Image 1 (cartoon, one colour):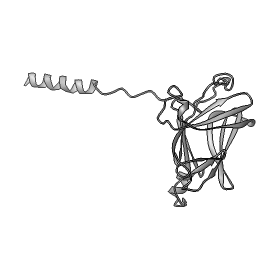
Image 2 (cartoon, helix red, strand yellow):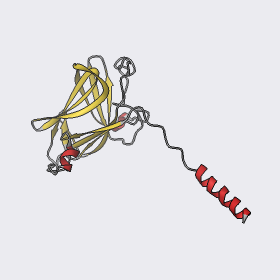
Image 3 (cartoon, rainbow, N blue to C red):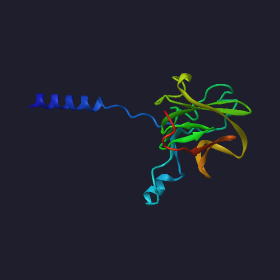
Image 4 (cartoon, rainbow, N blue to C red):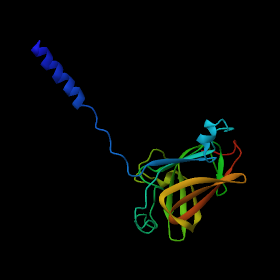
Length: 193
């Protein structure tokens, strides 16, 4: 009996010790924004008429007293538009960006910042960590957008949608910099992925 108990204890302790250690909490949490804004709340209240038009999922780093643009985010170098995994944007309907048709689907979203403008990049590759596996041959779209000084200093990197007539502005803001990417709805049968 003692031998059975000893073997049982050894077996149980082996199982307990083999459990994976939980990962540490990430310093840059993930966030998500919808177009239309507050889509999950509208759906819970039964006020959503249809599925969302777009959803962006991104890591949300904090400024933390650092110099952001021209500092930790280098000018003229590819940026993942957030922290950790590359920012992903999913369109549930066909849209137009910078006059180009974009088929519904999921894309990664990058930026090449300069002091005067940003080049925003929509790429067909998905599930990328950072920009380490970025392949420019898979770019679907590149467009330049102006940057402007924001009225307030924003601590956490933020992306959100503002409704406009026939579309939305995707607003990207962090530190004292703000950029706006206009997106409009497109006919369903016109875009190819």
